[in-house]
Image (cartoon, rainbow, N blue to C red; front, side):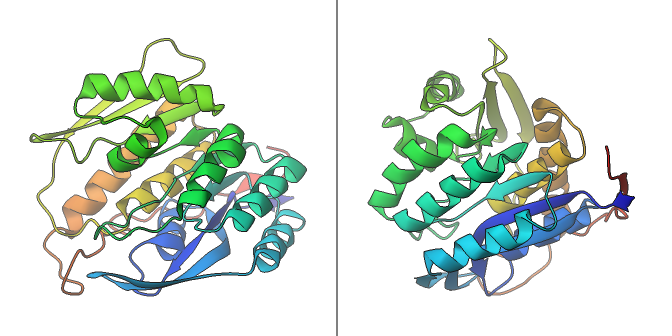
Length: 277
């Protein structure tokens, strides 16, 4: 029997289509995989900001996850925005029940426009309940500072804190350094299997169209893991995908604020696996 590689994204909905579940589905599809989703929250937002968040009842989040896991059996799970402690618990229990092979957790706490997306109680809950179950967490600098409890100002700080964050129980940490000063971007990957960190550098692309880049990156990483790449290789390929998506969409105007990247600059046909692969 043949099937498509499937990724389940568990995250919030962005009605403007640039971030959240919508960005996840675009990225997964553009890379040739099948996207399933479980919505944790409905947000009222556009390219200028977030004006409202309504959490989905935890029982319905649980039901969505069960419906997908018991029928489609995704190869990887991507987790995004969660702003409710009960939903954190539902997701943690689901991961412990179904034991997915790969879990990529993007701890979305602040939107591109600077709006807070996660309650303080939920931050504590993800630290103790979700992060220990993750293959990889992908915080940006602001999120890494919250998780580490310390300011991060240099690449050396990123390396130290990435290693320290492994103590939270996850198998890997990718700190995204896009907000560091300077003309170069540097992301730091530290895995439990490697003593030395992996550094990924690239020139910054001057663009306002960066809405949903974190969502897109974590979904792309989950997709490449489902396709058989190692963590380091999945991160490298996902970063290249996002970089080219920003580059190819930098001169396109959608909305009046931070527009989206171009997810479909070079779409890949659907991969097909044998069921036993």
